[in-house]
Length: 343
Image (cartoon, rainbow, N blue to C red; front, side, top):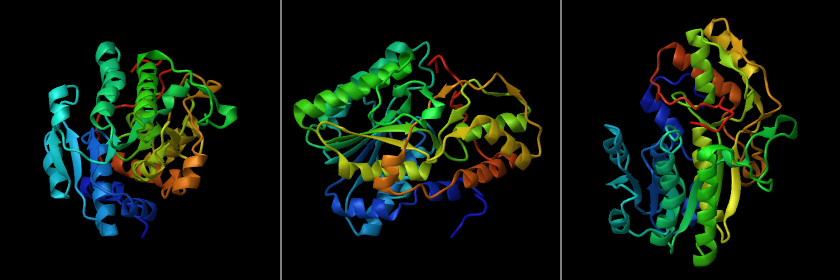
């Protein structure tokens, strides 16, 4: 049934954690428990809940365990209320990491982006050192590891987005450290025969966070929308969650690399104009569109895991309605307009 309006955070998170038939089928075939490392981030709670819901729908008895420091008040009990077990852990603490339970299926979601400028050492520790620790700890598991489309660097808009086989050209400490993450996972995947799926995400969106939300909030506040990075991809977070969980079945050694991206190359200018109409606010722009952007081609993922369920038009409508009503925000701008790789 189509959802006309998202009324509350509870309804939103139910929608974001609704599994696709493909997720139910995948988790019906996979054996064993699932651990989500970084389960309290932007995507972690709803991905963990989706794994729980899909396992229940498949009639599979397994533990779904969310691991995080759980520094945000209320996140841990909300996961527990939906059948996800939780463990508090600083993953950079080797002793604490070693104490985590065994599981044959790991979803690696931890990492550092926002605030990386000025904390470059911690950024590299989180994004490039920790993956080696996790691979040593879970050398007998399969791992779905989140990466980012930023490892491609800026891609010509006319080419329709970077493909998995394209050369990598990261810029800035964040993107470079994410390439480091990929290389570490690849090294241990090869040397320890760990099946890995590497997920290059560009960009997940819901009503509280994402590039679409950033644009909508600027239009609503009467602030100029920056056009220097004039194009982007956007995929509804539930669809990104589903693709990530399905990728566990495709994990290989060496790693299976897949883009998770929306099907369209979106124009920042055109999206802002749509929000202007829906919000009944004039839109202002600054800068001019460049010939390149952080965009990816997600066609292989769509063929393997299904076309995204939720269209850009639906996302824009939901987000416009949400921000106009003063709905909750995660307060984490994506900085999608940054061309210098500094976040």
